[in-house]
Image (cartoon, rainbow, N blue to C red; front, side, top):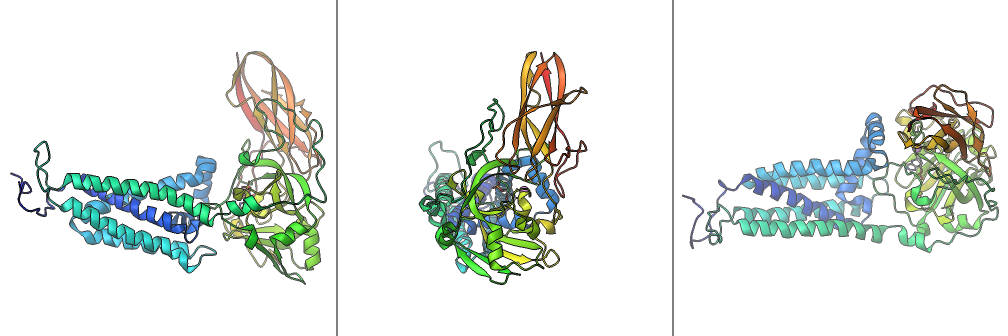
Length: 527
Ligand SMILES: Nc1nc2c(c(=O)[nH]1)N[C@H]1C(S)=C(S)[C@@H](COP(=O)(O)O)O[C@H]1N2
Ligand SMILES: [Mo]
């Protein structure tokens, strides 16, 4: 009946009756083993050199703006996780197909692995800061993948030495194959996870960050004024804890920069270009300021805003000392991962506390927020003033250089941040009993300050909210208003007026290309 039923005869090869699932498992396991090997080897080059990370990062850089906006809108801060999961899904399907085909034609699998190695190596070698060793993880992934392919293919095509316990006929040595697939699959999972952790440890900045001691600021921030935090349940705290601070950047894994080897190059249209080390920076006069940072992609009511106490070196005196030339109207800062951010020089030099920050809420900058040094410019959106992992500042002109986001259609010089206000509590669609309800939230118009916040219920009159205290015009401001809620469905609307007396416009505009406008509202049900 079955040609492979050999009963004591010598193993014989059979491809005709190997079921398709064997090919699928083979393909997926081989791909997993290859990628895991790449992860492990990246520990000896850089976390960003693993084929998955390098290809994912290259994909992010080539993603058109509309797709990026869609991803941010759909997945929020999990946009990168979504990318990785999507990539792995596509890869799993492709490997399954390749696996099925390579049962009969091994060359298909070999070609796919060589392709994987070449694409991975090309992606890794073209990352900013890449060295020749960055090709190693992809090359290793390919080699280990070829080995796994040979091993599993052999098991898949070998006839059983004897029939299995049930006496059912098998066209191939199912046990040997399944055993091999499980062993390799487990090794791949362990290696992939362990490799990622090892890469993080070996090439990571965490040890460097743990060693850093930030000296006391010579110009410290006074304690927060009483009443800055109104302490309403559900209201964003005045100081956003570091782990809750929003994160927006294009890095698939946060760049790992060590303070010991970090330098900042200051050059371009300056009379005295200079290189600054981390120790030199810490030796300068440090100021400490409460500053609110917001993202231009924040929608009305969105969470891409946070307030922290930053410690750093003021940029204006540094640039003056370097002899910033009058003709330079744009400061282009570059991060280690190749991000470029263009900041209007006039804004940095106008006396505000634009700084090179080294600490956030009393800790060295968290790695995701730019360790060891980032820029912050009060009053500007992050994409034109808050370069993380900064390594260069070039004084130049807007005419001479278009920065990263500008090339993608965002405004080159969007001007100051739009005035914004947000209702934090009650939450949208909340249900509550009739009676007194505290409506509360935050409002921000960095560097102009918030003068007034008003709340309206349905089409009623605007009611002035009580404002929290603030240390300066550079932070957001909490507000609260006591509402006597009556039964029914109600719409609560908020609007703020900035320190210049200008009230937020009602008209909603989307974030692209220079920041959203419009009033935030929530609908609630009172029972
Ligand atoms: N190197 C680098 N710096 C960057 C970005 C980036 O993608 N790469 N994104 C900018 C944007 S758009 C914003 S809003 C802020 C966000 O800073 P955070 O992640 O610390 O909140 O960082 C800015 N600095
Ligand atoms: Mo942003």
